[in-house]
Image 1 (cartoon, protein in one colour):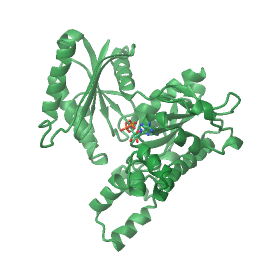
Image 2 (cartoon, protein in one colour):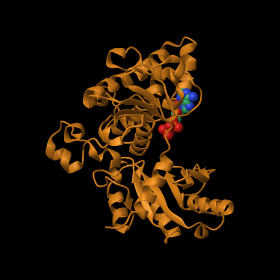
Image 3 (cartoon, protein in one colour):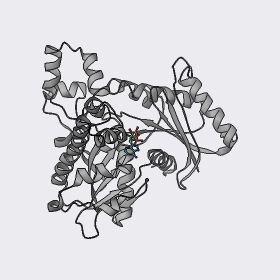
Image 4 (spheres, helix red, strand yellow):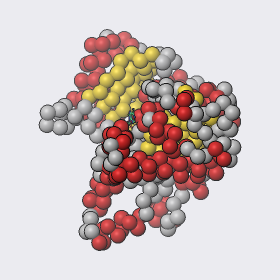
Length: 382
Ligand code: ADP
């Protein structure tokens, strides 16, 4: 069985051709700089190029017997709790949700429409970053706002990185040799964007990202948690407009705002060279992770494992040991020899006798999308 996975951003489309049972990856690539002067004209040209490239590598797509095309869609609002077979109505609902994710949903929708036109005989499945978090209880997803206003505008916590958290949660249960339904985890997805999620019995029960992917942990260029009063103050006192504030909190804050570099490897280099701003930036980055780990240990009660994943989580042993240092009284401990492995592979980094196992698990969002899409199209219809 073969699934084509499309992950469309505002100026790029990543694609993979995957056997979800394998996992054999048959082809993989990215078309970048869509809409830029020296790049590809638009998403339609980019998608055509992807199909041509795939056919050059693997032969006619019709001959591959594609089981599905899996589309990553960032925001499913409270409308989509599951991977969903796309028809015109589903497209319309995704379009209606665009104001919730103005940078992310429109390009995904464009690719979805174009791909349905190019490959009309293949089922198209939308897989939403928010879907896994639709199990949050009201106390975790509600903001203490005027409830009518919040309801009218859909203001609530949705959460993101759900596809990744779902993948690593199942992988973690397998590694622990436990039934996922009886496994409680704190999952730390630390990439360019970063989030913490409390998973009870395979379901998300709290997560640090909110209505948008801004809330929670310190990120490469995003603030994470900040008093909304600080933004009102900057608007009034510094004369920053809404667009200025949007750029500030999304693009020029986080590690970049604190240390002048958004990549932790560069922050480490500066910190080691004695740069006090970089030292504070990485300290704060880990402090915020520890803050959420503590919160979620309290939310979950008995916790079987803490899982690190994504670019930073899989590679940065300093962040792993500093964020979880000094938590032995909570049963959390990192073994420094186990933690110091190089590269990106599944690994237990806590001592054998620790109450809470600490794991590193490489995420694979494309494989998870392919699996969810193929499960949906092969499920017996009820
Ligand atoms: P995305 O969130 O875009 O999917 P990734 O999960 O690939 O991104 O994470 C990208 C981030 O991972 C980069 O910004 C980089 O800072 C970080 N990263 C990658 N490798 C390392 C490493 N060896 N040490 C520390 N950070 C790393």
